[in-house]
Structures are given as structure tokens and as C-alpha cells.
Amino acid sequence: MAEVVEKAKAAREAALRLAKTPLKVRNRALLRVAKAVEQSEDQLLRANAKDMREGERMVERGELTAATLQRLKLSPSKVRAVAEMVRSVARLPDPLGKTVYAMEMDKGLEVYKVTCPIGVIGTVFEARPDVLPQIASLCLKSGNAVIMKGGREAVHSNRAFFELIKRETEAVGIPRGWIQLIEAREEVRELLKLDQYVDLLIPRGSKAFIQYVQANTRIPVLGHAEGICHVYVDEHADLSKAVSICYDAKVQYPAVCNAVETILVHSKLADRFLSKLGDLYRQAGVEIRGCPRARRILPWAKPATEEDWRTEYLDLVVSVRVVNSLQEAVDHINRYGSGHTDAIVTESKKAALEFVEGVDSSSVMVNASTRFSDGYRYGLGAEVGISTTKIHARGPVGLEGLTTTKYVVVGRGHVVADYVGERAKRFTHRPLRREWREALG
Image 1: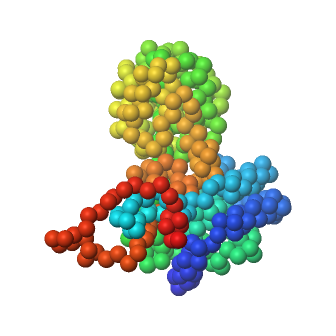
Image 2 (image 1 turned 90 degrees about the horizontal axis):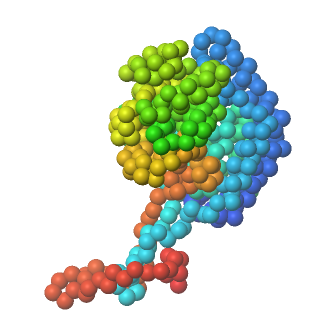
Image 3 (image 1 turned 90 degrees about the vertical axis):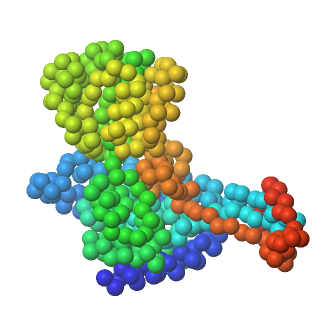
């Protein structure tokens, strides 16, 4: 595994240079990538077609689900969406060098807290070919080097995007080695050992995989274990909105972490709501697993087990439970949910406030589909993932989540000895309103 170590060393060296690369160079590189993606559409689609053919054979052998295969497919519209995503990252303000805190310690002695890159990001992600350019774009804009490992089902698509991004960015002055690709599982195991080179790991995938990463590395880990998302239909909900939101949250794209897995409905609205939604779900091929009260309304639904409330289906399957109160819904979500994204449908401001304040999740929706939980849709340009941890980033992780801070202290020959003892000078601790660069003269 010496090759992985060499890639990590190269990424570390590149990260130190990339941290000093001007914004205009980073943006120029991103715009060049966006244009190359559009011009290379046929090449990218051919690479993806190879993955799709191999994926179809895996589905036939029972090694891959149809829903996962759907996530793997790249289309002309998705290629154009990738290019636009890269441009949207380029349009974002520079996340680096921002003053987030400024304080006068004493006359002529000032301290500033300034944003800077994390360094080297190691990321392992699922078989979605659009993920690699998303993560790479955000890392480049935020001045981080990145070591990437995608799902083996997307190996040809990932290689095509990687080579394109590497070529186009290095051509305009981005440090060589800033982006690295590994492909074998053995290389991931080796990567987990390299805490002297890698500053942060962002794994995406199954709960078991996330737990494996956390248990086998000393590198800080940022990520989410599961996307067990809920929609609670309150007694004060608009029936039409509720049906539309629950349909979208499950059917629009079921194989993603922000798709709804459990629907909770207030008993006062259950008959009318479930009758309408049940018909639409049946037409869309959605399998419903319901509690006893839900099955009395939808007798064709399968019985829900205790395990169903804890399951991320990532497929056209949904569990349904009838509850007697908003608090019962909140208690269910906090017990069984994964802290990812949960929604309420209600026309009551009081109910909405209680739900938002009571649910402990990284995104809480009011009268909107859980599918909106996404970095691009939130205006972050893109996302490297959605974090359900609370340190240091939570929810969709964009540029801000890929930066840390350093303190910059600017003085005029000041020494601590003057501030201790019987004749110690006193600190003024007066807030300042200026950028750290201004203090340098």
C-alpha cells in the first residue's frame, strides 16, 4: 500500500501550497472544469455506460438493487447539472481569510480569528458519478487537497471525472497532487492509518461502513450514519399540501438519504389523508408498512415491525404510523430518527414552532419536502455530504464546513512580562471592526 502513502504525502504538500493560491486562480480553475465537463459530455456518458452495463449484470446476480442502479445513471441533463454546479461554486464568496472575530487586547496589540483550509480531506462515497465533481469543487474552492474513493460500481465514471478535473485544474496553476483517487478497499484501510497526512475523513454510505471508519481511525470523522427521515402530518395540515409533500419526499427520488422513510399522521386526519396518499403510492409502486391503525385504513398495507421504524429503505418502501398528538410524533422522531431531516405539514404556527424546537435534527422542514435538504438547494453551491454530528459542521456541508480557523495576533514588540506582576498592564479587550489584513500595515 505504499502507493496510498505516496498519494497522501503528495496531497499534504499540495494542500500547503493550495492554501495560498489566490481566489482568482481557484475560480478560474473551476470555470475551466465546468466548460470541460460540457465539452466532454459524450466521453463522460460513454464511461458511465460501461458502469451501467456492469451494474445491470450485478442487479441480475442480486449484488445491486435497482434503486442503487438508478443513482448510478448519468444523463445529458445530469452532465449539464454538474457543469452548473461547478459554476455555482465558483460564484460563491471566498471562504478563506475571513475575519470572524477581532479584538484589541491592548493598544497596538490585536487578535483576529481567521478562516483557513482544513488541509487534506479524505472522502469515501457511494456510487453516484456526480458526487466526485461536487466534492472536488468544494475542496478546491476552500483550499483543501482531497483523496477520493468512490463506489466500485461507478469506477469508470469516477475515473473520467477525476482525469478531467486533474487535467483542467493543474493547467491553470492549481498545485499538482491536490486531487487523488484511490479505488481498492485495501487502499481505504491504509488511508485510515494516515493521520499524519489526512486531517478529516468524510465517509458516505451505510451505517455499518460509517461505524467501521470511526472505529478504525484516529483521524476526525464527519458524516452521517443514516437518513431515516420523517414527515409528520399534523391535525391542522392542509390535506392537498400533505399529500403532495409526502408523495414527493418518497417517490421523486427514493434512493437518497433525504427521502422520507416514515410518515406519521395525526389520528384526526388519518382516514382522509391515508386514503388519498395510499392510492397515489399504490400507483407509484410504493410498498406501505403500517401500524395497526394505518392498516385498518389501508388493509392492503403490510404490518410494520419495530425494525421498520429504524430502517432506511432507500427504495419505494415507506412505514406509516398514526399518532394521537404532535408530541407523540416528536417523541417517535427523536427515538427512531437519525437526526438527518424531518418535516411537519401544518397550518398552525404554534404546532410548527413546537415541532422545530422539539425535533433534534440537522434540517427541519415546515410545509416542504425532505428532499430539499441538499447543499446545492440551500445555496451552498454543492455539498460534500450531510452531517448528523454536531461538531464541527451539521446538516449539508458546503464551503464553511470545509474550513477551520486560526488566530492571528499582531503586536508592536509586546511581551507577556508587561502584563503580569504587581505593576501589570491591563488588557483593554475592545471589540474591533476591521479585517485582519488591515492590521499588518
